[in-house]
Amino acid sequence: MAKNKKMKLPLVYQPVGFVLSWAGGALAGMAFRKAWMAIRHEEDAPDALDPDRGWGEILLAAAVQGAIFAAVRSAVDRTGAKAIARSTGVWPVTEKGGGRD
Image (cartoon, rainbow, N blue to C red; front, side):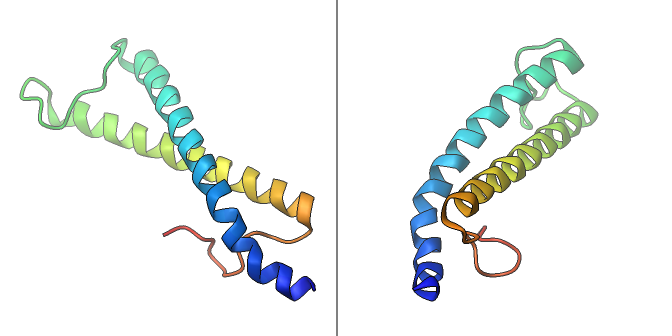
């Protein structure tokens, strides 16, 4: 029975993982807006195609945004996996390296 449970769990976890990823993306977006406001005292980060912004500012915004999104995504993924493991006794992703595409 445990082997059958292990085989079905990744399929069951996919919709949960999708919802967690969506929520994590929204959370990361809010965190980035607050971080950018603290760094540059502006509501909106520069767009890469904005001719009035310099390379440094655009690359800084991209690096900060990427770091925040990666950290939030990892925290959300790990929290979801641990919650599933606690409730079922089985880790939701069977292959090493996780289930990200």
